[in-house]
Amino acid sequence: MTKATYDTGNIFAKILRGELPCHKIHEDADTIAFMDIMPRGPGHCLVLPKKPARNLLDADADSLVAVARTVQTVARGAMKAFQADGVTINQYNETAGGQVVFHLHVHIIPRFDGIKLRHAGGPMEKPETLAEQAQMIRAALAQS
Image 1 (tube, rainbow, N blue to C red):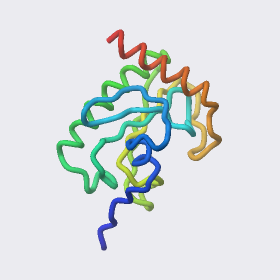
Image 2 (cartoon, one colour):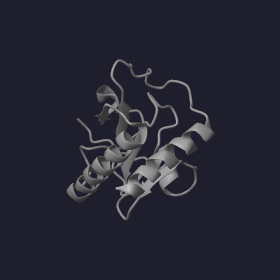
Image 3 (tube, rainbow, N blue to C red):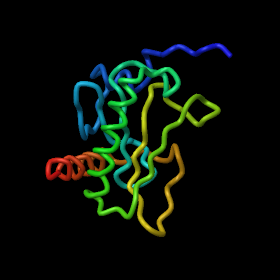
Image 4 (cartoon, helix red, strand yellow):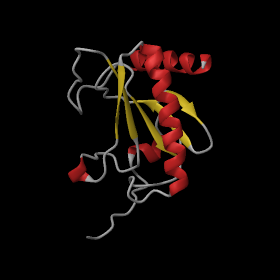
């Protein structure tokens, strides 16, 4: 098996460089969290390391620790903001594992009893809805 290389042209690399916009929730020295533009449910957001890493398989340990900390923080904020019953955390590696964008990222999806997730890759959400949801999560984080 040949190790795939990191593509600096992927959409998340462009967001990290400020070439594309995002609805940011959280940012620190090592990670960024923002809304998923094709959410599977209300409050669906993503956490990424700032360091280039194709996925979990080639990320350095410090990036993984930073991502895990941010995932926990943002998941708590998202659950609070949406008064969710639970949260789904997903992370995919390589095409066969379901990965579509090849920069390490973790999905955080607030969950509600009896409500199924929308299909992956579904329609894009309205920017104003994403902005509102990002603000809700930021407010919940500020209260923590």
